[in-house]
Image (cartoon, rainbow, N blue to C red; front, side):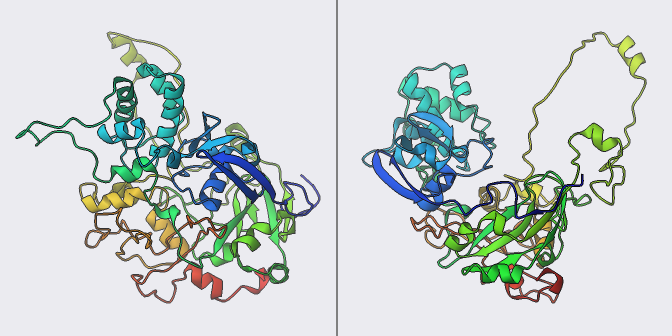
Length: 488
C-alpha cells in the first residue's frame, strides 16, 4: 500500500483528549458518583479508582470471566463494559455479597465444598452463581454449568464449584462436623479460603508502593505497518509529569516467546508492527499526566502495509515476510513418521468417520505452574512453597524471557508479599534452594487499591535483588541510563 504517512495513533478522534464526566450509579447498594473518562472499562473503574480489587483481571477481553460483576442483577464481564454504561444502574461486586458481616449462602457453600482454590476466578464464579440463583433457586446441574460457562477455572476442574452451587439449593452451606475420633480424613474448610470468597485476598496486581509510577503502553492501530518515532525529548517537555518514554532500544533482549528456541515477539516493536495492538512504546510517569496524553500527540509516524490476514495468504509468499528468519512465513517444520494408514483402516475391527473441531484456547501467557515456568526440567509442584508462585497468575511468566528482556541476572530470589498486609499469606514465600522458578521476581508489578486515582503499575527493585553484572539493566536503569541519540 502507498498510503500517506499517518501521524499519531490514527485509530481514534484526532482532537483533544477525552474529557472526564460525572457518572452516578449504585455500587453495592450505596449511591456513588465518579468523575472519569466515560470510555474507561468498568473493571478499571472498580479497581483503580474505587479500590475494589476483589474484581480480578485475567484477560481484559471477555474471555476468562474473572472480572464478572452484576449489572442490574445480570452477570457481565466488567472489562467489556464502559463506565458510562453504569450510569443510573446498579453494580454489585464480590465485596457486596456479604451483608452485615455475614457471608452469603453461596460464600459459605464455596468454603464448605473447597470451591475456592487459587482464588483468581472465585469472585467471578460467585457473581455468576448469584445471578443464577436469583433467577432459579433450584437449578439442575446443566443449568449451573450454563450459568458458569463464561468463567474459566484452572484449579478445581469445576466439580467443587458446581457442587457448591447445587448445595445452596439443598441448604448444605457448611462443612459437616465429623464425630469425635473421626476427624482424620474428613473434609475441612480451606484455611485461607475466607479471603478468597470475600474478595479480600491480595495478589500482585492489588497493591502498589507509595509514590509508584504509572506505565501506559501505546499500541499499534494498524494490522501491519512500519513506523518512525519522532522527537521524544520535546514530547516529554510538552507533558509535565511524563518522566520517560521507553522504546525498543531500552530493552536489552527485545524478544520473547513461549518456546525458548522460537522467540518471535518483541517486547516493544522496533520499526515494524505485525498485528493491531502490538506494543510500540511505554509512557512512564504520574497517573494523571500519563493518562491525559492523547494518542494523536504521540510522535509516531506510520506507513501502513498490506496485512497478511490468513494462513493461506502467508504461505503464498507474501512480501515482505513477517520475519526475516522465516522468508516463507513458516515458523517451524517438523517430521512425522507414520505407517500405512490405508492398510491399518482395512485391518481395523471398527472404523468411524467424522469431522471433529476444537475451540481455540490461548492460555500460554497466564496461570503457569512452577514446573512449566522452569521449562519442565525441574518439578517443584510437590513443594508447598510453590503455591505462592501459582498465586501470581500472570505476573510470573516464562522466567527466562523476562530476565533476558530486562537484562537481569538469573539468581534465586524471594517473591515479595504486598507490604500492607501479610496476614493472608501464612505460608513462606521463600523459594526452594537453587530454584530458578522465582527468577522473574526482580520486577514486582503492583496496583494501588486505595481510592486515589494514582493507582499505579510500577517496577520496584526489592532489597533482595542480586547485584547486577555490567550488562544488566533494569526498568529503573532504563529510566536513568544513557539514551540512543537517534531515538531522542
